[in-house]
Length: 59
Ligand SMILES: [Zn+2]
Image: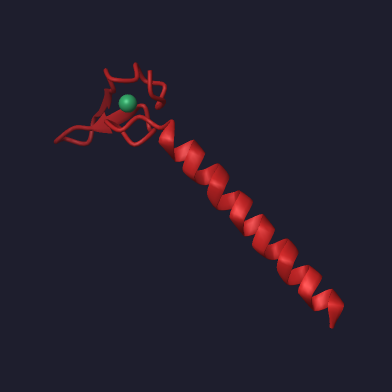
């Protein structure tokens, strides 16, 4: 029974760390292009994002 509690605790801790890392990672993404570094034009062409200069991260 103790093992189940330990496993659940490890999974919960892992999930908590995962969401923490993902949230911190998402906050660094460029809001203009959602981290892609480019945005698609009306004809499907790739336009280089000027806000982050194609890096996908906030300047
Ligand atoms: Zn961008």
